[in-house]
Image (cartoon, rainbow, N blue to C red; front, side, top):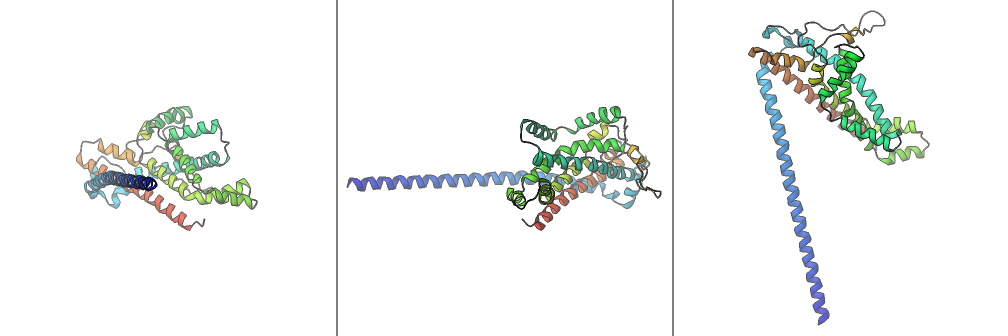
Length: 319
């Protein structure tokens, strides 16, 4: 009889524990649903706010969406003012930014992740690179003003602007490269080493190949940030009104390359938008709205391209 009572008590205790576990699971599932709902609401608020602002800019700037707006120089008459010098300047500055930041950033990320010894010095570098990714852009502008404009005497030129924005996105490229490399399974490296591959062969033929989707995504996201930056460009002295184009990088005389454009004065899309917003005439504000919509559209296209390329590359990779 006593054994039966003990067994009943144990059964009751087990049932009570099971009920407690079920209650805990139900509570955690409810918390998950609440958190997911809050996250979805926050996401929708951000997306709807961006969509509202974008639609407002498009509606305000719609009258200027024509070929003339892209082919004309800025003017004191709002109706005939265009973006030619601004978008050409943006393209040239982005070219210098890409060439100065991407090779260095990808190489630095590969070295830190694959070759650098794991000690306090490499940890210090990693911490500083991560911190630099969060530094306000105006700090890079002040650094460039002292280093490139006055220190190296590069002047207020396209080269200075490109190097400044290259410094700005360099930490982003390094961090994204390292994260992409860390996502490669260790088994791939071990299999390559097992068949006699050298360190360089493993890195060049396997690590870079399998991580190129993530690296490319980080590069495009960094470039999309750079194209909309204003503070560092203003700091180094970008022109707010420019009615000429830099010399062409390509000529019809051997060696068919011209580097005079690197030292030319320039303006970019955000600066031109800022110039028109500072005018009291409402017609210039329409031009600014059209420019803002174009900048947002280019940024969204670049980010969308990054997502598509990452999906495409990962889909084609055979693990």
